[in-house]
Length: 107
Image (tube, rainbow, N blue to C red; front, side, top):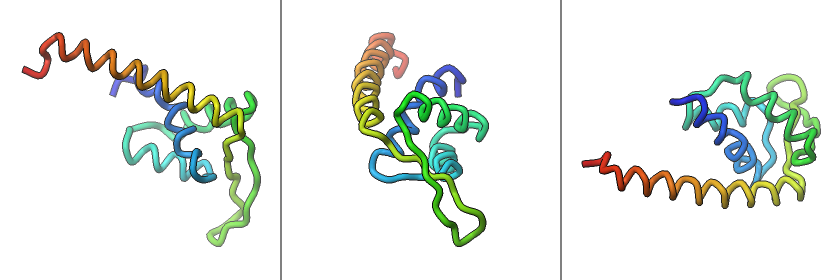
């Protein structure tokens, strides 16, 4: 998949995964990797940036399988940002789909 497509969608994917539940980094990577081929190294810098921008907070939680895990949680500001990104994504994808349809690529 085109790397520019992935870069643009990755932030939205991360925030969407955190909307209903807190998750640890590797879990986020795995969930995204189930749908899109990504490298683990592309998610952690994004998580750090989102935390720095105030969209996420973190906390440590004990793990039964090893050391404590760092969990990521959406802040209220992060929820607002997700809503904006989601609306922008809908408008963008609808526009692209319309242009593809007009180009008759599916015929």
